[in-house]
Length: 152
Image (cartoon, rainbow, N blue to C red; front, top):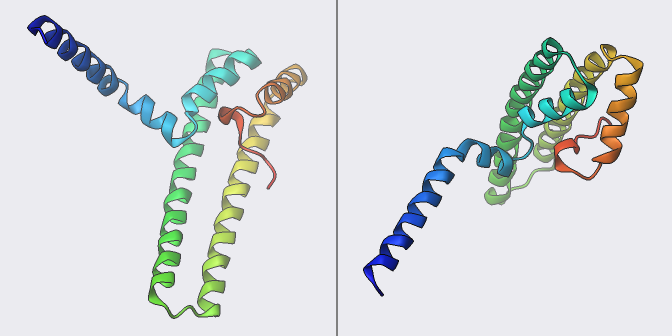
């Protein structure tokens, strides 16, 4: 193998690593799920929101994501409690009932938060914007960016 080829391979590897490092937050967000900034931009563009409305939507979605992150952390703790109970070997029905009651309560909190945030956003839309929102959701029903059902 010639040194020119080895240097070329090294440069390509270094470039790829630099690009990945530079875009690490965006890549992590994509792998983790929905990128709320992308949702805000898409919805603002499709609904033709004014710049101040678009900023308000971005702030709402950011607050929504923070709340959902907290609920995800709580869900991870509940999952860890279940794993601990499974490993212990003494699975008591009442302990399992309490754990699943906590999971149901967490799901209800997530639903209530998403519902209230959507109702508040919906109230500020004009009839034309509501039609465009419905069309947007219809067009992208299978896309992970919009896969957040309002109803369980």
